[in-house]
Amino acid sequence: MMDRALVLLSGGQDSTVCLAWALERFETVETIGFDYGQRHRVEMTCRIAIRSAIRRDFPRWADRLGCDHVLDLGVLGTISDTALTQDAAIAFNANGLPNTFVPGRNLLFFQFAAAVAYRRSLKHLVGGMCETDYSGYPDCRDDTLKALQVAINLGMDRRFVIHTPLMWRDKAATWKMGFELGGAPFEALTIDETHTCYLGERSRKHAWGFGCGTCPACELRSAGYNRYRAEGDR
Ligand code: ZN
Image 1: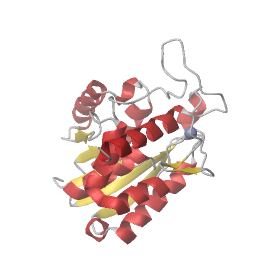
Image 2: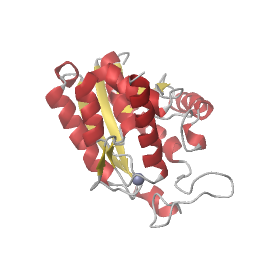
Image 3: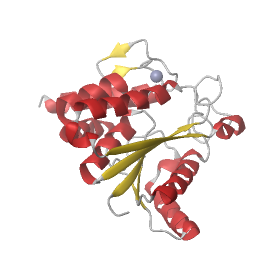
Image 4: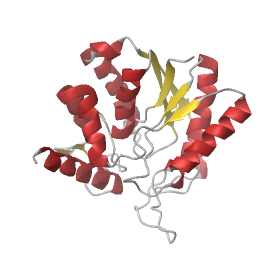
């Protein structure tokens, strides 16, 4: 199990950079994705394109990339009243969280990932959560995920390790990390194939990729890209 990992690959930029990070480190890397009725379900198509591009354009990673698992978590969409799972305008709640927060999402994702990893003998669970430059989701926090690792290991009597390589990086640093891992071809893959926009918009292309340009996810991605470019010019 030591060199075997499972990456939570949503089809977004962060999880795609985490996939590259894992492919640099582990002998075998499988991926898992969740269909939970998200408005931006186009990301489920993107994750297939991302895996194909890695197999095609990155020979040193291609042999390590193992199988893909897609789980239907439609029940999460039916019990969540959020702008990510319903046709509602994105706004901020009284507690300061955007109404794109899907309660319990990452907690459930890691538990289902661990259940698959248990069967597949994969020790390392990798996710793109980050609490440096984020929307404030409490299930992205380092303490949440460390506590979750303990709970999963106790409840499954295994020794899984949860890795969150982006936890202390801002979005500009995530762009830089992607470039350091896979160079210009990986940066092009990130721009062309990954999806971040909450509204599922893919008809408009910007320097940083496709998206509406104004939702919270697009704002984080574009601001990070602009800072990354500005730092590179210094
Ligand atoms: Zn957007």
